[in-house]
Length: 188
Image (cartoon, rainbow, N blue to C red; front, side, top):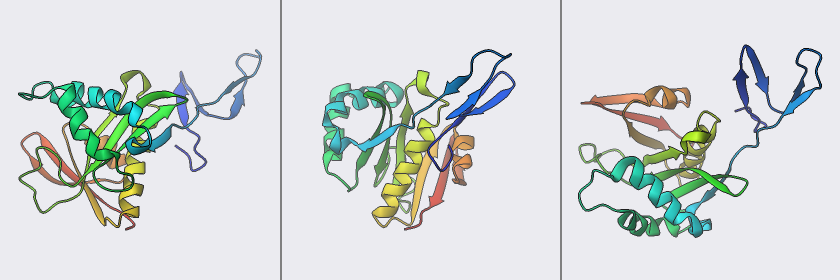
């Protein structure tokens, strides 16, 4: 994503940046525009709580005994207070919810690292909207929120997405089994 909010993508051998006009084989010009996602706190969009709970449950919680969309919905109710942890962000394109990310004091499965806090967690983008910069926008928005809250460093655990986070300035701190612990200093 560029500083002006525009994004680039590749089609065949040509690289495009939105808001540009290209001509294909002397055909009519084609203008491509990709709007950046709107990112809001779940506190501002409580109507999306069931959607976010469903995404998180289906992505990470289906194998957890006793977990359900209802239990995730109950957990996320604490995220409805603006500008304090825990907080969840939701990305929308026009009115369609397409992704989420959360800032937590401690994430599930991080008990072996009690000295590290807070955590970026539950970064999810609807599969058909991936590779459009939405995940990066959500991660960067969480970093900005954490900075505004006075956080000096953020942490995350990942299995298989370390290259994505490394491109956003995160660095590997530790590896434990298949989990990778990463951190990122903020401007806080």
